[in-house]
Image 1 (cartoon, rainbow, N blue to C red):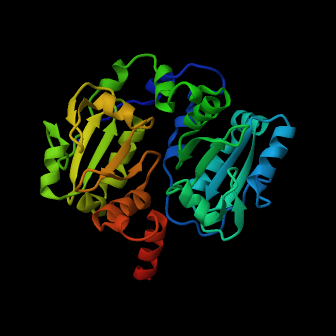
Image 2: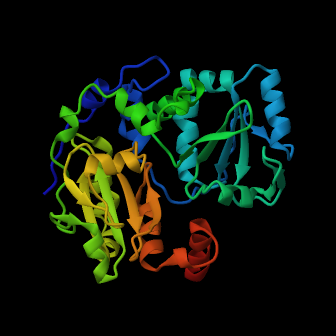
Length: 346
């Protein structure tokens, strides 16, 4: 039985920093931003004309940005038929405030995660576009890596987020909050109180009940999926009512140990590595800033992969299969494994 909550009024209360930080609006949080078909696009994406293509040396790109008085550069890792990339361009990058703020402070350099062109990173090391995407663990597209004015990678976003969260990330880096706190802490500071986040969660029969001793669960040799959620959470409701309502997803989850935690509570938890903590402190130590986030652990208690951005059916199901079929033990990354699976199915 699902517990439904009105999310819009809650989100409007959560964040009140500046025009470019985290004040969500109706357009930020409506379902047209969050609900979309995440199957492969029929037509290839066309980048906005202000995206820059690399000349092969990120130090050159950085030098150009510095001469223009900018804070640094952003590398964008995408795919030509990525529905999440399309949504990012249609929502966050079509918002005039976000676009202007980004262009004022950064040059955005676009890469294809399957690209073969050579590129030299700011540390002088040479990669292909594909190798650079693996280096920065751009498992989910779009992924963004922020470089400061000295060429140091200082922050990464992986996957698609609602515009208000991307706007907050932009300010977090531009105003150099990363020098003194994590993004999860920065984002939590904008929270006007945890009361609204402590409501009930979506109840599902595949979630294990307390006590949450994840170290003890390793004895059954299954992978473990930890769902970090919060009360009054529209994006959590969407996860449960859409991708997690499909039988294929449920079949995969039932092969795992599945735990659901409210990331704002003091619920006692023993982590897969045996540390005694609380749900809130564990989420903080994992630097989780998006609800829902799902973190997957192997039967030895090591983190495999996490889904900490918007995820619809195909992305979530792909990750569930990757974990259950132990694709992480094969050469390459998640994207390599998914490509092999597509070739097998065809």
